[in-house]
Length: 169
View: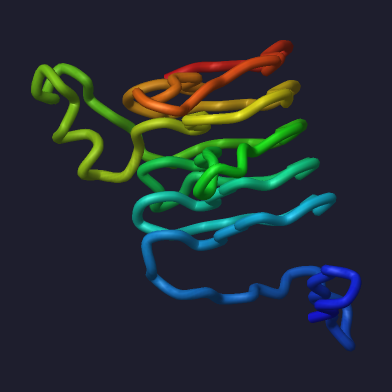
């Protein structure tokens, strides 16, 4: 951890291929709060029984070539922290897959049965200004692949580009 330059380093003395960094079973596998200019690429994030990744009040965050969704109700949640809005969050070239095979005929009207099994929204944007969701494969989510819905009150979503994605059940 380099607090002066605001870097987090994950380093392996051996070839990191085929290695796993295990985390906990808390509500978020990865929490980003008030960070700027952070890039995540070539990572698989599992768990966090509510969300795999939470981005709160961050600027210029990039997720590229990620695999997210196993054992998450939401893959990535983007919102603000106190009054700081998240800005310029990019999610590209990634796979969002709960790996659940749902039988929608057996779900209740509000899909609560399916959501209890782990999947609601792949990407859930509550608040943010500027960003991109592109070139992703998003599958096996019960509510939405990409939800852009500002909450009531002082929440706002603007300037988000969503293009060239593959959404499927």
